Image (cartoon, rainbow, N blue to C red):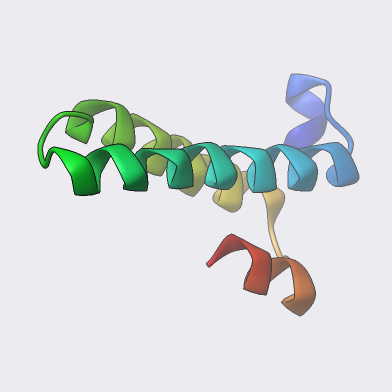
Amino acid sequence: MAKTFGFNDSELKMLLVAVRHMRRTFARAQAAEPGVVDSYAALYDALHEKLLDMAGPVPEELRQTLK
């Protein structure tokens, strides 16, 4: 499926890590003022789940990075 969008498997897994990292940036804002970034956080969570599904099996060391 990744090839459908022009990514190879490695690029898709890197994108997956990047999206997860972007989602984590909302944690500080959310802690400071709950509710402010909920809609953005939900979008990144949904994108992360879609990319994870597209990526297929993820190596254990990468899975630890995604948590």
